[in-house]
Image (cartoon, rainbow, N blue to C red; front, top):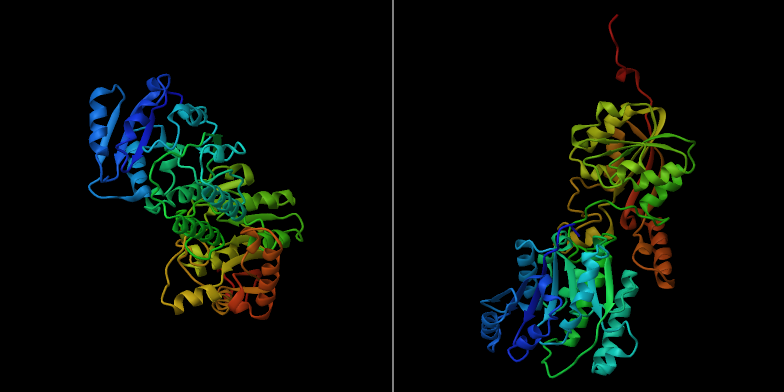
Length: 484
């Protein structure tokens, strides 16, 4: 959080809340009121007089109220989208979501805000489950309690998180964090809250939970429980599959920094294993991103020069030398030559003329040196199924990553290597990195089956193609003769 006095806003999401809205506003603690820059009351086209109650309260209160009524019902998620966009537009630093039906306690609003102001979190969630027994004592119906625990357990299991509750609507966000996620692409329904958690996790934002009291009164619940459960479960599974390139990954938004695939059976894992068999080498890492692969190679004793389009946070500390350059323009002269090994891991598919880059790499790699390459396999069953079904489109990552400019099958890539003067010293094919999705016996069994299928039919089941290449010997006709 910035050093200046933070601008704190409260978003009151309201639908048919005429009987409770004034009471909710009254309950905002007097001690907290001087810290509030704005309260946004967003009436989602209520069928009662919620909007009029808000306007009337505005006339008699000293709270900094802004009251709006949507011309049509936007839904629970759609209402939040408007409120968060207003928070951004109004220059707020913190925004708290408070329900207008009185289900959540305004009295403890400071508990949610203070960690954000202190810079200890990017989002703070009120949890009714942190104190054992409190939810039921506060009147949470048994079926809702069981459903909450089952869904939260499922979501934690799939995502590898440890939240005590995914389903509380009492939340505070850093507006700076909201600006970095694609919340506008989320559902307009009640699963918006789960989707925004996925986006925060995807962006590595810090989530903190604080205990809150549970209160169930005579408010009307508009949530279809079964539909909600299906939606949030679908969001989580879709997101997790998207992390290995199957589908668009839900609503997480486009992938930014390319992350290291730590699995031993992933393309990065195999490249690291290959490099472990090399003597200490001068390595050129094309498209080094944040330098995470280079960091592993340096631990093996190699010296790494990285090339990246723009500097990613932490990259310079993880490589021995960082060169900022656009590979579309070729390899810059300042990189030098005579490298023992060049690595193009998940790079060639991102340039429009990979043949030109491969030809130039022959100049950069010393005679007898090596080029290690990994590319996605366009012949994979997932892509074939998408194309056959007429559903071809780009995903956020994986084989159909929206940043890919060229596609390769095993045969087409081998032809490309032959044309550009490289011979294959070793080839290896890897399947889907199931162990990046989840852990457990079933996942391990799926991984073993996947590896068996890759061995039987690599052109259909290989997710990525890996090659250890060496420059072809120069034919006499290729030699460059200089007149004396």
